[in-house]
Amino acid sequence: MKMRWIWIALGLALAGCGPSVEDLCDDLLDECDDAIPHGDCVANGESLERRAERAGCEDQFEAYLDCIDDELCAWATQCTREKAALVTCTGEDAWQ
Image 1 (spheres, rainbow, N blue to C red):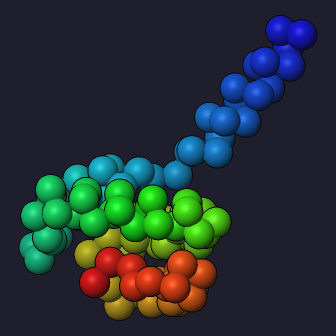
Image 2 (cartoon, rainbow, N blue to C red):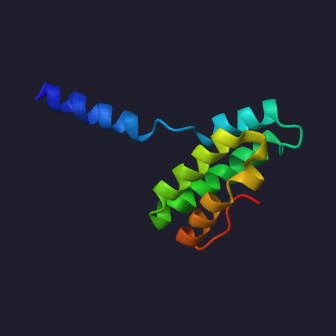
């Protein structure tokens, strides 16, 4: 029984192992000259995350965050495919 709980906990931990909105906003602020203010970045990102969760678009949201994490300062031009997939899934625009 104890082993089963360990596997459940491990699965939950791995499910959330990608970058968080706040972590990405920290990185963007630290690395990019034209980053939006940290508070706006976090608020917009968390709002987008809630919309994605409500629409069942967690995979698309995670792919978008992963792309932003990989591209950092170039995310606006390099993550258009991931953004489009998220917009298509949620029916709403992603970060501007």
